[in-house]
Image (cartoon, rainbow, N blue to C red; front, side):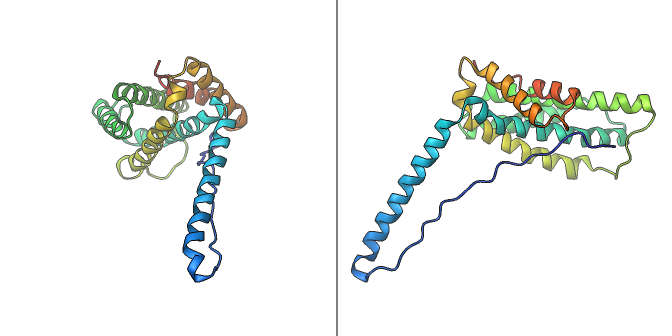
Length: 219
């Protein structure tokens, strides 16, 4: 089966490295401290300027990309459930995921209700993918060829990793998600992602991504 999605990873981060220059012993430690302080100020100014240069749509891209990664895993979940015959709905597991997300979100200073609403939307979007794929495979009478997939040992750790990344992105975009333009910004950020990845993202995935991020805004 042709893979219809591209898994993305965060953009590489550039680190600023300050080299210490050999100086006369009586002055070296004092001057090295100044060099380090100057470097820290420069790094802060560069980072702040870069952040100011980004639009809300740009700053939401990481959240969109991470949400897309979670939806990519939904295909594997669907295959695992095809093999086992398990239902798409798993309310105890969903409750467990939301409880864990709220706990982790609160530890990052996030509002528990907003975190709960966000992950409920993420879970519903994941199920949109599962329902659609399973229905397609039932109509065809078969699923794509695949190796056995262990939902508990393989898939859930991946989802836990993505969940932690989503919590971090929510914490980084608090102000944007509380703005009056948030819904338009999120919609445009998703549109930008879909346009960039138009050869990998089909209509089903685009709809699911809209659903996944439907509760991103806190106003």
